[in-house]
Amino acid sequence: MSASATDPTAISSRVYNFSAGPAAMPVSVLKELQEELLCLPGAGASLMELSHRGQVFTDILHGAENSIRSLYGISDDYAVLFLQGGAALQFSMIPANLIRGNDKTAQYIVTGSWGKKAIGEAKKEGNIESIYDAKESNFDHVPSPGDYKVRDDAAYLYYCSNETIQGVQFAQAPSCPTSVPLVCDASSDLLSRPLDINKYGIIYACAQKNAGPAGVTVVIIRRDLLDHAPANLPGYMTYKNHADGDSMWNTPPTFAVWALGKVARWLTDDIGGLAAMQAVNEQKAKLVYEVIDANSNFYKGHAKPDCRSKMNVTFNLPNDELLGRFVKEAASQDLASLKGHRSVGGIRASIYNAMPLEGAEALASFMKDFASKNG
Ligand SMILES: *Cc1c(COP(=O)(O)O)cnc(C)c1O
Image 1: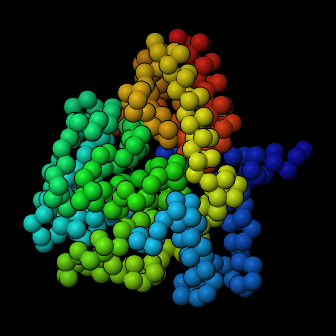
Image 2 (image 1 turned 90 degrees about the vertical axis):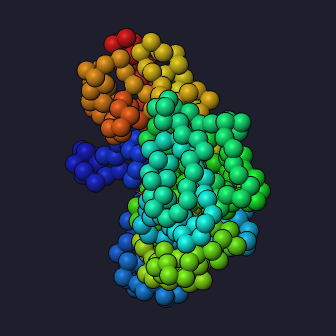
Image 3 (image 1 turned 60 degrees about the vertical axis):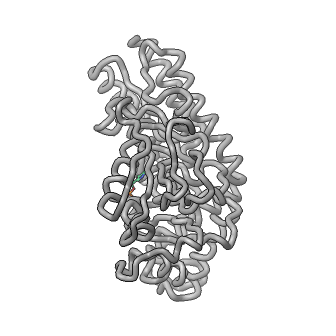
């Protein structure tokens, strides 16, 4: 009998995990973490047991930062911060730093649940205008540039590049006057494709979709935006403190930063960078969407075709009974966590960076079979 047949922790016991987040991580990264967990080579202790001020962790943090900087070619005009509080804290930190206590207005484009949550938090901080809201059509699309008007004196324009729950993604950033900082929640698609960071004032992502374990949020912020915070803002909420303190204004989430650094290195060395990652991600998404389109009497995609997410594929089945069977039968074939978010229903297949092509192939083939048996 092979070891894997008896060992529930063996790699062969791992399923294709379509979870929306926390989500699949690269196996090679998990193996490295496992190997180095008890004793980081040369450090005499686990990384989790070391001071964040010591050389070992400082090098790890700078390594993670440098990997992200070189993946995107980020210039010194930007700070790259590792923060806690998830994407959710950014919903508040952004307006708190940029509009709390002043009379400027920030504008929001809302294309799904996360944008909706973000604008709700922002309204507690100052003047907010929604300039586009796709809720009438159940968040199935993103706007075209002519559909909204950004004022030249807006404090910033906010949007979410990939709405994880609805599976709706901007192919390009929305158009925005150069005088207005563009702010983006890229929690579920940062590191999945190349981007010109220079277009952004702030772009941020919690790690647990594409970049590592929960517990750390990457915030890339143009340095001129560090000087707008009101003096009485709590210290942790103030971006400038984190930028001045090299993300060590207080104790950073050392384990999560360590893991994120390994994911960024995997992306660079094993995958070959963001363009290579994007090519694989598009291939995976195409496999699944093709099955939806070829069986359009059976599978109903949620997003309009030109707004479909490459990361979260959302679709429904003809009825709840079939939906339940789909989830159950998929799970029996090691295709896990496919049930959609309760607010949208149906199926959501999250195919982030760490989902191998084989996983998308297995899902597509299961979907074809299921439709032909039940359609
Ligand atoms: C997951 C997610 C969030 C929420 O992240 P938390 O870390 O739970 O706060 C926000 N926005 C998007 C786009 C997400 O995918």
